[in-house]
Length: 82
Image (cartoon, rainbow, N blue to C red; front, side, top):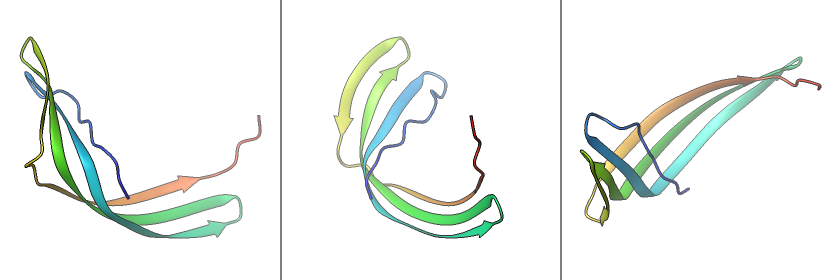
């Protein structure tokens, strides 16, 4: 799996993590009209783009980044007819 993480700006620093690699596994249950899912993901991001720092735009990328993200995701869904 691949992807990117673009968190909200923190103070004067705005960064975007890219080049994600890792996996996601999960299980789901269907109960009547409701679907419940539980997933676990473990991702490592290999580069970061410095989008802005203070009032200055940068666009500079760094490839020697090692950010690890482990998370659980619980979701519920149901159909809506429009």
